[in-house]
Image (cartoon, rainbow, N blue to C red; front, top):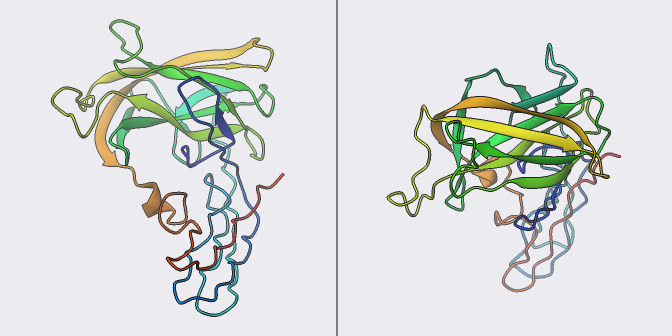
Length: 251
């Protein structure tokens, strides 16, 4: 939430890592103590969807620090939606109409993606999502991309939804001559299937979108306490205290 935001997203395909994203965390715990002048940073936030969880208090040269507050807003139910919807959205689900323009996100590791959003009222709390992107001319998976499979969490929302789901696009910033990203105006088909844990198909669908302008996606700018952003609780050079953990997800 990507996976920022956005229901639990545990990738279970052979080429994907497991990422957990939960909604609405409680308050963050206090930061750790330190006895050195090189204190640790803030603790990792508890959520990445619908508002960051509480950041741990920054450690100082004193013996204690306090935690921040956490928990984000619930996503509202979009108007006029059906039982199953394929959309977009980084934090909350946003509806898509055919040929809508969707920004292309340039990620911090040199790749590109667009956000996928899913809504389903009759799929249960944790259906299995299979998704990807197709070339409309060939109906084949886009070059240098792949199909993903994940268990998503549709609970804790007034209208069951998940957003901030990475959908890979071609291209690398470090090799634009050989691997360019799709140009603005390129047509792409986003597809998604929802199944239960037994493999029974619940819903499937697709929507054709048009790639828009490229925007830089910087998770650290949106959440400085996200893992890997330098404020995730690592101690100082001389053993500074670790920041407090972020809020636990709301059940």
